[in-house]
Image: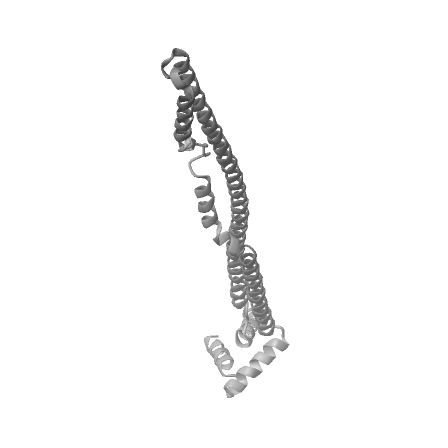
Length: 258
C-alpha cells in the first residue's frame, strides 16, 4: 500500500516523466474531470483587480471634483475673505470711542470790533464840543454816561450776534461732518459684513472639502480592504491540477481500499 501511494505521489510530481509538460497534462486532466478551479479563481482575481482599479479611478475623479469645488470657492470668496480683518479694523477705528459732541470755543471778545472804542471816543468828543458851558452840569454828565453805555451795549450786541452766527455756522458744519462720518461708518459696517460673509462661506467650503476628502479616503481604504480580503479568500479556495487530481485519486483509492 505504501509503495502504491509513493508511486502515485511520484506520478503527480512528475507525470509520465515529462516535467512541466506532464504538469500541464495533469492540470488539463484535472480541469477536464472538474477537479481544478484554477481558471475560475484566476477569472475572479482579474475581476477583483478590475474593481480595485475602477475604485481608484472613481476616488481620483472625486478628489478632482473636490479640488475644483475648493478652487472655485477660493476664487469667489477668497479675495474678500482675505480683506475681512482689515475691514473690521477700519470699522472699529471709524467708530472710535463713541459719538462726538459739539464744542464751540469762541466768545464775544473775539468778535468785538477793535474800532468800537475809537468810535465811542469820537462820539464822546463830539458831545463835549457841543456841550459848551454845560460840560460840568449833571445833565450833561448823565447824558454822556447814558450815551457811552448805549454805545457799549450796541457794540457788545453786535459782537454777540456775530459770535452766534459763527457758532451756528460751525454747528452746521459739524453736523454735516457727523452725517458724513455716520454714512462712512455705516458703509464700512456693510463692507465688513460682506467680507465677513465671504469669509464664512470660504470657511464652510474648506470644511466641506476636508470632510469630503476624509470620507473619500475612508471609503477608498474600506474598498481596498474588502477587495483585498476577497482576493485572499478566493486564493485560499484555489485547487491546482496536481492537488485536484491527487485529491481525486485519493478519493478513488479510499473507496477501493477503504
